[in-house]
Length: 191
Length: 209
Image (cartoon, rainbow over all chains, first blue to last red; front, side):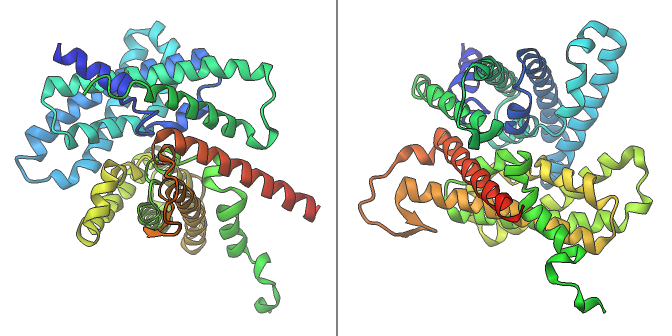
């Protein structure tokens, strides 16, 4: 029950892209087509859980006992880059169908701040291991939800004529603002 | 001889101006959005963030440009990341000691400077190909362009939500528009600034052509 609460809270109430602004660059760049958005979202969810697990072990078993927690930024980003690289090779070799679906998004993920952000939040909030897994899974799902619904909404822009001065990025920001307003309605649903 | 070239036609100045205005990171290329939205609740926080990003950008661009001939092409991304995260750790320490309150308010977003696309972007697009002094100018231009914009956004959001400017109350009894302080307001304010920027740029283009 506790895990379901953590997943719901991180996916909906405290959505990482609409409340903490993590991963906004790919959010705006990749929400042009639903297919790309869903592929990237699935890849992000997968990588977030994998990196959170590995970074948790590294932080609590290696960095903290040896008093090196100030190196966490450096170690986290290196482990994320390494995991993404390994996943890419592994998926290409053993799961070619999956690779066709979201393989091209994997290299982009290293610089998606949602990944590093979730690892940093996990340490900051002092989660236990399973809670951290639930939190990272929920965050990934939340990003997937946000970017997919954004792509769905942007389809309708072709039929309307927003102010020309806003440009493509501007109108996306306005829509994101309204989505964030809608998600604000969930505040207070969970503690 | 060299002094006869007007200031705005010198190479280093055009590079500086390009990062500052023409290819502004936030409006021109939609880079570095996370931090521009997350830390702009108050003008002080945004100024500290702007200063940190500019410092990391200038130092890492200078260093990478100095050692650019020795970096093997295949592993350059890893080298960029190592250099950048080293300086981000340094900046984090400096902030924690000098301004502990703001450092706590910024929270994980200081660490997230590492994944700010502007840093990797400038290293890959400029510092790796150009001599150190030009790289410093490029980094300074991009950093100040980014920093100036996030400070502007923060001033607007702080004024709308509390009626104050850098913590000093301007209009007592301002009807606090709480929305500006939270997430949706951030998106709307940034969209408004994008509109303003496009308008000004359109006007300037019409004048020169």
